[in-house]
Every structure is written in C-alpha cells, then in structure tokens.
Amino acid sequence: MSKILNNDRLYLLLTFVLFVLTLLLNFYSKISYCSLIFTFLAFTVNIISESQGYKKAIKSVILCTSASFAFAILYNMKYYIYGEPLTGLIFASLLSVFISSYISLIFFLKRKLQHSFLTRNFKSLLSHAFIDGLVMSIFFTSKFPMHRVLSIFYKETAYKLVYSCLLHLFILTTFYLLKQVKVSREYLSGLNITQLNN
Image (cartoon, rainbow, N blue to C red):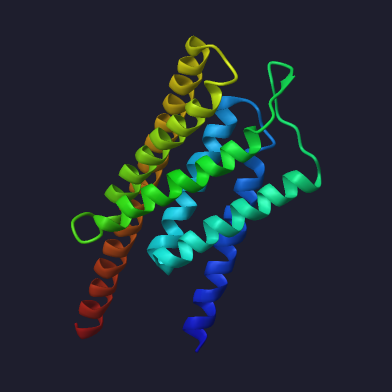
C-alpha cells in the first residue's frame, strides 16, 4: 500500500514539475532560456514515462499543456518577440510541446528492451529538440521571413542539443559516482566481515 502511495506521490510531484516548466516556457522570450526549460520539460516527461508508464505520461502532458493554455487565456498573456506581440505563439508552443512529447515518448518507449535509460533519454531529448523546432518553424513561417525562421530553428535546436548533451553528461557522471559509492561500500563491508572473523 505504501509503495502505491509513494508511486502516486512521485507521479503528482513530477506532474507538478512538468506543469511549472510548461508554464515557465511562456514567460521567457530568449531562445536560450526557452531551450533550457524545454530540455528539462522533455527530461521530466521521460522520467514520468519510465517510472509511471506511457499513459500517465501522456495524461500529464495533456493536463499541463491544457492548464497552461487556460492560464494564458485567463490572464490574457501576450508574447513579444523583437518588441512586437505575436498572436498564437503561446498556443503554438504548447501544441509543439504536446506533439514533440507524444512522438518522442513513442520513440523512447519503443527502444526500452534494446537500450538503457540513459541512451533512450538522450535520443528522446534529441528528437524532442528537432520536432519542437520543426513545429515552431511552421508557425514562424507566417510571421517572419524565411531567413529569420531558419535562424530561429538553428539557434533553438543548437541550444537544445547543447543542453541535452550537458544533461546527459551530468546524469552519466551521477550514475557512475553512485556505482562507485556502492562498490566502495561493498568492499568496506567485506573488509569488516573478514576483520571480525580474524
């Protein structure tokens, strides 16, 4: 019973983190900040799907994007780029989050038996970055000239790739250090047992 309760608490906590990240996505106009938030958003979706399953991950994404959209409508949020308000950008960014999360989750879970979490997570973050960039580029084609759209796509995707690589290296280092701590503890406990026997 407590395992189920802890699992539900973890799910609620991760869904809350996902909601906060989804909401924060629309408060920043700098590409570097949005890309960083989006990378952590994609990572959170991957953690939810790994620990809770595909259905709960999709439910969380739908809930968070819908709630963020309702919040944006309720508070009449406007998004500005280069000092000009862009209508429809908040809806496009939330739609982009949903589409990229949906496709990347399928890719993430399809490889579950073949690859470790680290490998699947990294590939999923890369696909998140590319799909989000494509969806947002489609939106921007009606707002900006093509050279600016390509520039935004390039910058956005490059930032997300860099952040994904850094996150992957951080997780890899953390897993390695945890493994070394475990090996050290086993070695030390083995020494204590042999000293007691002597």
